Image (tube, rainbow, N blue to C red):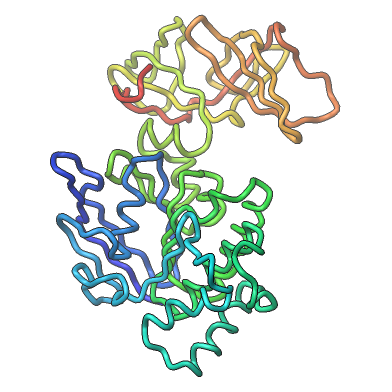
Length: 353
């Protein structure tokens, strides 16, 4: 394993910045996830680390060695592509051998390393199969074995689970995380799936428009988002927009919401659904309580989402446990309440409707 250091990494295509001054310090054995919507620069950043995209500025160091201008095969990084990139005419074993052969590893060592890598992903019994004879999850694990066979200093994962169905995706991400922890390999993964990111990462990097918006643990980003975009992208929130003066947020729908934080002028409050209390009478012991009408009920198994209209312009979502009790239905009037501790940010013009 090795430390990965990225400093002011930038990629320009004419006047367009695909990545802008991206700086990261990934510790030995850390699992870092680059998270963001399509086009935010996360894959470009990963490919600059791998050496497939030449940066316009900045540097990449692996284990203290500057690899910025080195080709991919001289960086000792293992990359798992989104579509696995397996050779269809080669067997599982031959696919795993490919990277070793490109590095001129002796034949006797190659055979040993193939079996070793396939045992890591529990596929050594399929060594003679062709990719078309494997399931999607098995193909993904072959691609992972190929990336690990030569013991890379850094493992790079580019949306590795996006082609799997939901159930298999959940299983394979646990396998990848367990394997990464067992090997202690420094890993950087790109995804737009926040559940994947929250499940697998030691730290997350949220990107937008080629730049980093926030770096932190899952709790940091969920509990203390740095801005409106992060609060909107990580987890779910209801947003109440208006004008703030002191600790009072006056919404467009005429509500006056008490906030612990202060942001003068146009502002937006992010309210997590599990922090909203619902009752048939005014909610006690919270700074904010309002009457509203249930507009939609979403059954999610163990939890239920209640979409509650507080004014023509203000709606909140409350998440409540699915107990054997009577829950309000669509059209019913309820009382909602929440504490004043919810995050408040200056209004982001790019995110306004």
